[in-house]
Length: 150
Image (cartoon, rainbow, N blue to C red):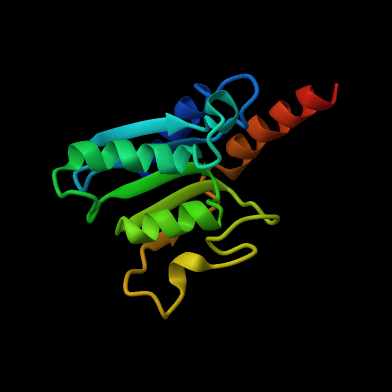
């Protein structure tokens, strides 16, 4: 699968967010490109401040990957650049690659505001590709926020 295919899967996952949650989707793929888990933001729906799509997908993937909490060899695809919490979680889970869609200049921690995942002080640094299908991912977010302002 291509990185664009990964982000298309994450866009489908984002549609699963509740009407009150920001539509962000995340999907974890194993080294062979097999989907392990997918999730949408559920912070508002669950009242859980950690229920970002990435965290939910990482938890579910770890449960089926077979190496405890380690997701080595896996790729996390997400529609929006991860925040500091999610960036820290994917580093600690030892995700090998991160592919994301829209850049997040206000809270992004994978190159925009911060670059948590490439900090040389960390013992694990995943490969990163950002801006994949940026227009499509950004459009989903713009539509959501536009509907909230109407």
